[in-house]
Amino acid sequence: MQDEQPDNLRVLGQQNGLSPASLLHFAHDLRNPLGCMQNALDVMCLDLGVSEQTSEMLAILQRQLDLLTELVNAFSERASLGRGVDSKS
Image (cartoon, rainbow, N blue to C red; front, side, top):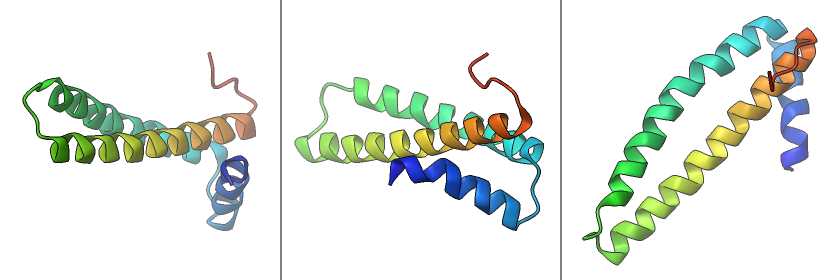
């Protein structure tokens, strides 16, 4: 299923008339809030006095944030490929 995400994103962009440049801009805009959320989560995880239940909830948040980050990265990569740009540079 994960391999299907970039193709699904390409199709979504085409169906909505979004250019690769628009998709790339959108993916870039999503990175800022994801970075803030990751930083906040990292700080919350530093508290050594958290309960087991809180630790489990933080782990759930981390997994979901990781999934969102992977999706945005795939989105950005697909948009970059659509523009002929190397997203790693």
